[in-house]
Length: 270
Image (cartoon, rainbow, N blue to C red; front, side):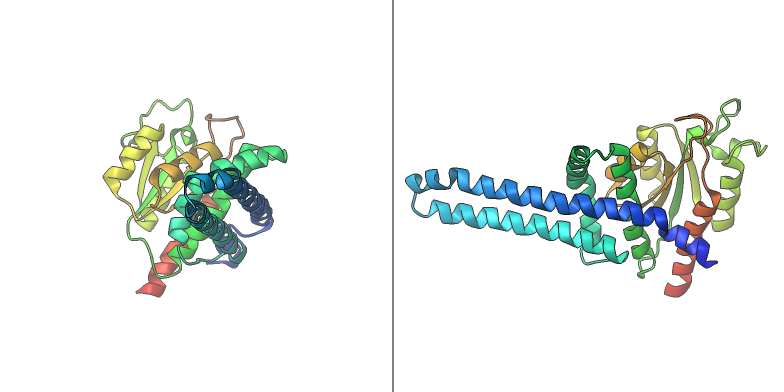
């Protein structure tokens, strides 16, 4: 695979550096905020506990300290993973922790600094992609891959229903569906179209993939990653030249690059 394409699969380049810098900045701010909160959480009731039982402050200190160490260790491990662009110990658990517990905090802290929710979500998905690809190239090569795409990629005037059977597509070439079908056939991966989160979750349950390559906007990608965690999801942002949810596009080079990386991982592990 050409280096340029391989880099795109890994999410490398100027955009990724920007995403990484934003996420690391927010993670560092979160670490300071969590530390400040836990210090306050410890000192405010500390002297009151002494009046209840002489050993209670020590027990409370132990619990608070353990929580602080666990949260800060998770944050700094995630920072290390983002900086290295490679897998780190507990990275699978870290992705789950980040998407369920950390991302809402990052969004709120980003708001303080004037960073939009969409920018934070974009940065998170970019780093998440790094960790997913690190797993793929680290001997945990997926066998069942689901290419999950949104309905808005279909030509808006097309009368053919492809939600439940993408092979109903007449392959007229007016939208990216034709190319996506051809790519799914070439690489032997499942291709499914979802019109919303409920259908997407049902498809995932039916297909039981080892890896999902999902195309969507920032909001839907984050929602999908959250709903399917700890299942690895590689997110590809759709392009919206006509606005949200109407005749959107996708970079086929990026889709192919991701599948080529998985294919290369299979060869190296076999």
